[in-house]
Length: 456
Image (cartoon, rainbow, N blue to C red; front, side, top):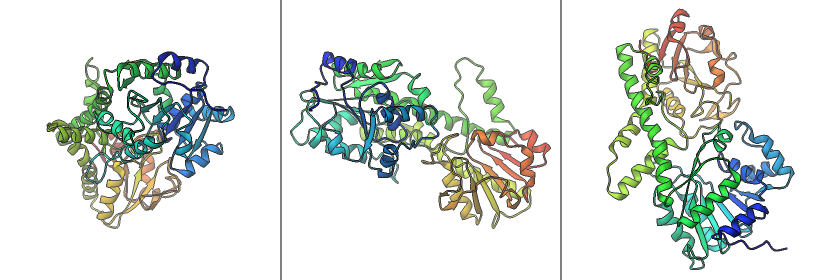
């Protein structure tokens, strides 16, 4: 039985297809954001298929194995939609796309070794869509991209075969994802989202679709590039402000001022938005988003010096962690060469299983250059090989053989560690890059303590 024909630029047709739940959805890219997105559409009663090149991921999903254990709330949804046969996964894009009305792209947009945004995944899929997309389908890009990428590249790639013409027999728009890893269900059900279309009618249709699935405010933008500009602006704002407080923390250290005390008091002012210093900024968003805007600036002959300098500061923070560590070793009158140092946390942010662009990697590499034997403990990577190192199963097994610990990621588990634990080390050196431990308690415990931005 052939699927009903839905004209995706016709608001009445789309509304009826949602109400009758006959609209078929294909989510291409079912990773950290794409899978929760697909589950959300399936939960609303729409038949949804996820496409991914990761065969193991697809096999796990179809076997009923939920892959995102660090995303609270989604496992129950996953098992429910699998049981109800509203969601499945495939590696066969050629079969999934032609049998769908709505195509959502949730594909990675990393950067290359030269810090240039890499849109290979989007370009590849767009080229495939040129051959397999059904007429009158709607493509929505959720990936974070530079302003103008839809208008300047995606439309041309999908149209290149001459079979499809935008605004005539295929339609495109954006609804940039707006979720924090580890808190995606909360964010999908609470945070406003941006909607932009190739024209205003398509924007209204996208808004109608997302209103059916998500009970959040949907903000219509005049076009796709404006929506993407908003998304980048919000994330780069964070990157810049983290750089600001990190740079201040370097000076406050020299002045004997505790940056955390400054920030806790400063946030009492109504218009101050608190950001914390740390070992560096990682993950698939903030660093890349800044370089996306810098790439746009280069392309348009513009100058974004604040963003550029903010990136330099954040990228220098791993070296500062090394400097703090060396200073602590000098105070203890021991050599760092041939020492044993435990890295507490390698995830790029607390309470998620994700090491994309984590500053921990650079810290580890710099320690190894100093001749250090590096150990890793992270509750999300127990007994795994990370950066060529077999991780520890717990802290207790290794603590007595250590010369120092460096806390890189503020997982909740680490906040429960008693400060007395670190006295069990051969040399009780503790470097805290995330403000987890109280410097006065560390002093009382007779640790050689260095806290990033905490003064001396």
